[in-house]
Image (cartoon, rainbow, N blue to C red; front, side, top):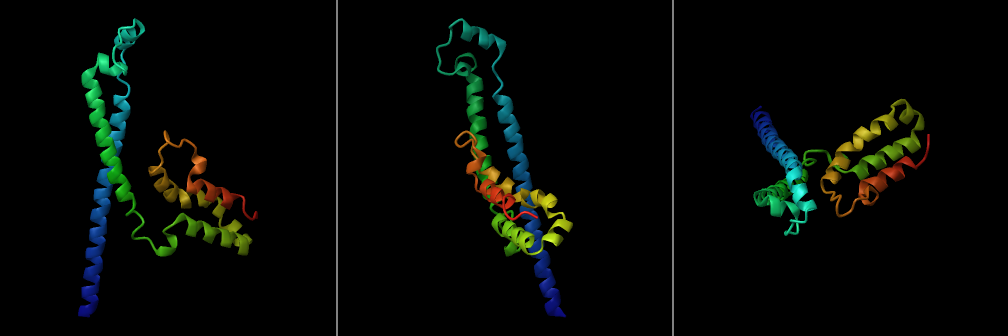
Amino acid sequence: WQQLRKDSQEVFHAQAETAERRTARLRRMQQFEALRVAKRASCTFLLPQEWISMSLGHETSSHPSQAAFPAAASKVAAVEADWAEQRQLLLEDSKLIFEDVADEFRSMEMIVSFLEQWKEHYPTEYAKAFVSVAAPRIVAPFVRMEALRWEPFEEPKLEVMPWYGRLLEYGNGAQT
């Protein structure tokens, strides 16, 4: 009985620790979202007066905001630095999201291969379970995880992302 009590206490403490990590991760994700919104807002600081000075040729700096609004340029740099730091923290936290998931469900590859086997070996049950309707929701967390690492300005094509090719193969596999 004491061993059972000790085991349940250990499980409770492990779950509490996991909940604390999730709460901290959620807090960092909210901060990241706030910084993303701030960065988006800071990119819209071109005012009509600045446009007029640019059109009259009074521009001496390489970037219009630096000539008209030097304080705004330093603010943008600070926001970009915070953005990079928060993004790095978010990427580090994203590695922990699936740590408490069973091994057979930790990767999209494993789940998609399971669904393919189900589709191939049990097509009637696969159709009755509406797996084709549920599949996007099943793989969505994995796609989102990969989308966190996406740099659209460096590689704007989604086709080069691993999840895209894998899901394209799944969709073009054996038809029911």
